[in-house]
Length: 87
Image (cartoon, rainbow, N blue to C red; front, top):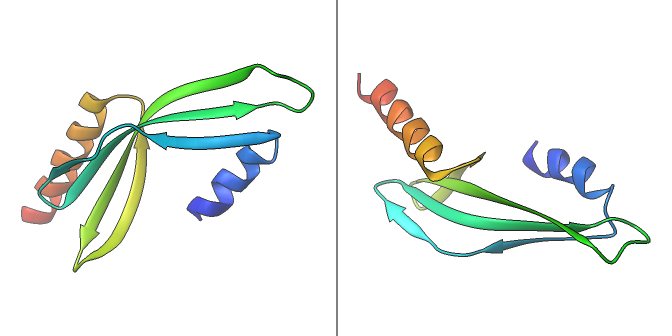
């Protein structure tokens, strides 16, 4: 499902890239501040968006990948999910 969602977005661009800037481990989550860049066809200008990718790991495997606009939002979502599991 994640790949399909990105494929539809990426299809609009001639070039795209996701550039991880840092990896922050916290319990079962890895927070990755990321810069996404895309170039539209027939353009030399890149569009950039910064986002936070959160990888949740269970039993040594990536269980989920979620994207957020900022670190506070990402941390809040992970805490809320942890609270739901524990209680």
